[in-house]
Image 1 (cartoon, helix red, strand yellow):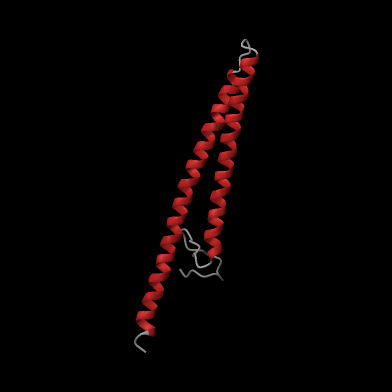
Image 2: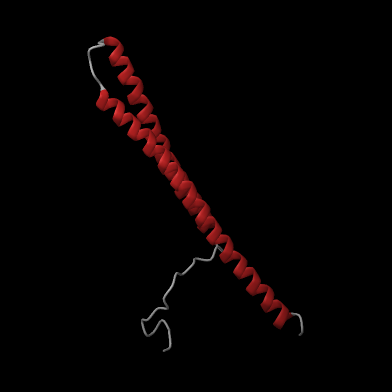
Length: 119
């Protein structure tokens, strides 16, 4: 079975974008920084909410703010998890790009050794 673009069939498996263009690497870094910015925002919101609940408890000790404390804890933990997962995804994507780059360099070296050097 021939696989070509005209037949509309694609080979199974993942296609890796080759990092020849520096925009690939830069877009990966921008995505990572956007996730970090989101995580830091959640962390800050959780800390501000916790501090505000302490402030309100100081004004009125009878006021129970257990829900606010739980929400602030959830926001801080969510921010930490998002930051951790974004870092892991960034490292995985960087390794995929480096493997693809190594394959391109190896292919170019083989081409040079077989065709360019002997002539």
